[in-house]
Length: 544
Image (cartoon, rainbow, N blue to C red; front, side, top):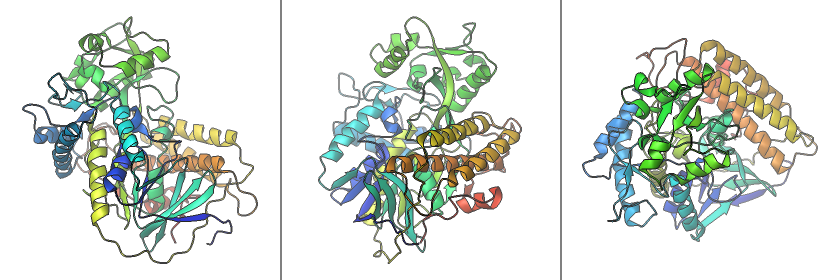
C-alpha cells in the first residue's frame, strides 16, 4: 500500500541498527564507506554493552590456547554449540584482542604492560581481559563511541526507532523508522542488525530498558530464519532489590573468591557442583532460584573478592551504595534475572542471514557459538569478532542495484492511545513471560503464558487506526516496543513448548532430562502463525 502520510526518504550505502559494541564495531570497520547508524537511544553508546561488568574472554595468557577456550565454550553449551564456529570465535578473538592491546585500548594491565587476566565460571584458565576493573563494557563502548563520532563517513541518527524492514522479492531494500520529526524510509541495499537482546521482555532483568527485542522482531516479521529462541540465560547473581533493571553483581566476583551463602550462612554451591561458585551459569542460577522460590534468601559474600582485588570492583561498590548496602559489612542479597539470549537471527560465519541484504551481529544473532548456555565473557568477544566479520563481508560482497519497490505504509497508531494503557500492556506481557518462561518452566505454565501473550497482542492491535490523526513519535515507539516484546515473548514460548527436554538454560520441570533427539531448531514467523493462530499486526509485515 502507498502511504497517504508524507515522509522522508533517505539513501544510504549501509545501515547499522544499534549502538552497542557489535554495531559500533561494524560501523567503524566499514569506514570510509558511508554508513548510517540508527539508534533509539538519545546518544552513543547504548544497549547492554554499556552495562557489561564482566570482561572479554580471550586466550592471550601464557600457556593458554584458543583451542582450550573453544573446548570450554563447547562444554558450557550443553551439546548445542557449533564447534567450528566456537573455534572461529576463539581463534579470531585472541588475534583481535592482541591487536586491540597493541592499539592502546584501555585494558587493565600489569606494571610490565601485559594484560591482567581474571577467571570466571566454567573457564579452565584465567583468560578474562578487563577494562576499568568491572566497567569493561562501559570503557570499551565509550572509547569506540569517541572514535565513531570522529569518523567523517558516519551519520548517526539518535532517538530513531527502527520499525520494519522493506523488502522486494525477498531482498532487503531499506528500513522504515520513526524519528522525532516523523517517519523516515532509509533506502539501502545493506542493513546490519545489531540491536542486542530481549531481556526487557521479562519482568526481572539486568538489561536496560531499550533491550526489547526489536531486531529479532524486525527480522521475524520479514521472514528471516531464527534459532534457539528458548535459550535465555538468567544471571545467577543480580542484586535482590526493587529496581528495573536490577543491578548485576559480576561473575568476576566469584572468580575472585566471592561465595554464595544461604540464610544460615552455609556455603551451598560445593554441594551442588564440583566447581562450586564457578559452575556453569545455568547450574548456579537454578541452585539459587530453587532457594529463592522456596522463600529462602540467598546472599553473595563479596568480602573475599574485595580483599583479593581492593580496586577491582568500583562499579559493584557504587551499585551497592546506591541501594544503601555495604558489602564490606555483610553479604549481599541476590536472585537470578534474565540476562542474555543465546537464540536469535540465524547467521553464517560472516553474519549473513537468510534474507539477501540483511546481516546480524552481537546478541541479536544466533551464530551457534553459545549453544544452550553461553560461557561467561564470550558475549563481548562475540560482538567484537562478528561485528568485524560482518563489516568485512558487507564491504567485499557485491550486490545488484536495488529493484524498484513501492513505498510502505507505516503502521498507524491511534492518536488517543495513552502512555498508561501501553505501560499496562507492557507490564502484563513482561510478567507473563517471566512467570511462564522463566528460569524453570513447564508445559502448563508455557501454555498459560501463550494464551495471555496472544490476548495482549490482539488487544495491542486494536490500537491501530486506518484514518485520522496518528499518534506522536514517542507513542509510536512505545507501541512498537510493546509489539516487539509480545512477538518475541510468543516466539520464546513457542520454542520452549516444542523443546520437551531440559538442556543448559532451558529447564522444564515436566521434562527434567536432556533428550539427544532435540538438536538445534530453526523456525520462522510462519511456523508461529500456523500453530498459535493469527498474528495480529505481525502477519502482514512490511514486505512489498
